[in-house]
Length: 401
Ligand SMILES: Nc1nc2c(ncn2[C@@H]2O[C@H](COP(=O)(O)OP(=O)(O)OP(=O)(O)O)[C@@H](O)[C@H]2O)c(=O)[nH]1
Ligand SMILES: [Mg+2]
Image (cartoon, rainbow, N blue to C red; front, side, top):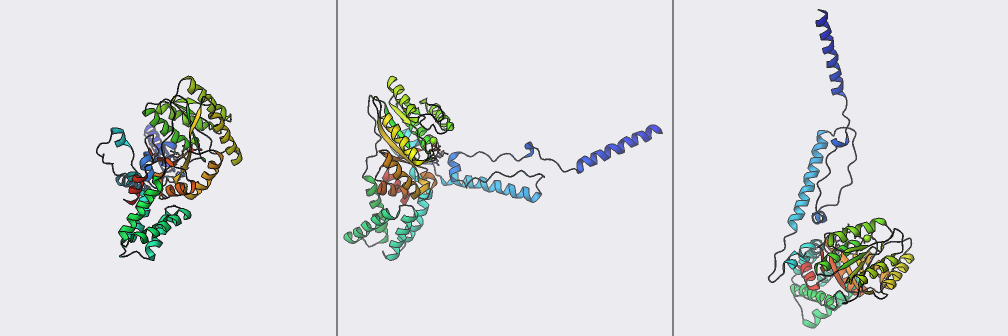
C-alpha cells in the first residue's frame, strides 16, 4: 500500500512540473529567429524594392496574425524580385556578334527606369494631332525631370524649335523623331577612346567623391583590360580607409591583376609611384590607380589628387587617362561636385555609374553640355561584366524604345 501511495505521489509531482514548464512563455533563442531573407543577386536586387530595415527581436513568439503578415511580406518580396527578373528581358544575340559582345549588358535591358519616365511624356506628345504649346511644355517637363538640366534643356528645345520651323515639321511623330536625332547628334561629337601608349606604364587615375563607384569601376576596367590581353597593376591610392585597399585586393585577385598597396593613412602618391616603378620593371601595360573620395577637407582632397597626378606622370610613368567617376543617381548634384574635380585635375573622360538604377538618364546630356567632357564608360550593374563603352546611338535608341 505504501509503495502504491509513493508511486502516486511521484506521478502527481512530475505532472505538476510538466504542466509548469509547458505554461511558461518560451524564450526565443537565436536559432529560433526566422532565417535571413534569401540572398538576391545584385542584378535582381537592383530592380527589387529598397531593402527593409532589420527586424527587431521580439521577446515572445509572434501571434498567428503576425506570422501571416510576415509570410505575406516574404511572398510579396519574392514576387517583386521575380517580376524584376521577368522585366529584364534576355538580350537576343545580334547577327555577327562575337560571344564576348553577346555577353555585354545592353542599354535596352538595363535602363528601364530612365526609359519609363520618358515614355509617358513621349506617348502623350505623340498622341496629339498637331504640335502645340502643350507639346513643347511636355517635352520641356520630360527633359527636366530626366535631369537634362535647365541649361541643356533650353539649348536643346531652342534648336528643335528652329529646326521644326526651318524644315516645316508638322506632325507630333516627326517632332519626337527630330528630338531623337538632335540628341544623337549632340552626343556624337566626342572622342570616347581610352588612351593607351605602347611601351610605357600607362596610368589611368580614377577620381570622384565617395561612394560613386571608383573602386568597383577599377575592378571592371581591370577585368576588361586583362581580357584584352593587357597586364594590369591596381594601385590602392585610397589610403584613407584600410577597407578600400582590401576591396581593391579582392578585385585584383578576381580579375588576375597585381595589387600595390601602402599603409592606412600613408602617402597615396608614394603608393602610385611604387606601382609605376613596379610596372616599369615588369613591363606592365597599365596602372589603374584608385584614389580617396573623401578627406578631412575638400581642399586637402584636391591638393592630394594634384600631387598624385604629378607623381604618376613622372617618367617612366605617364598619365594617359584621368577618369572622373559620376554616380548617375545623384543627378545634377553630381555635376556640381564634378566641376571641382575638373578644376583640380585635368579630367579626360567620365565614367557614369549606376545608370541601371535611375530614371535620370538625361544626366548624360547635362554632362556633355555642362562639363564638355566625353562619357567614355557606363556602369550598368555591380558585376565585373557590367561596364560598357558609351555608345550614344544605342543609348538614345534604348531611351526612346
Ligand atoms: N547598380 C550599380 N551599382 C554600382 C555600379 N557601380 C558601382 N556600384 C555600387 O556602388 C557602391 C559603391 O561602389 P565603390 O566602388 O565602393 O565606390 P567608391 O567610389 O570606391 O567609394 P569610396 O571608396 O567610399 O570613395 C558599391 O556597392 C558598388 O557595387 C553600377 O554601375 N551599378
Ligand atoms: Mg573606393
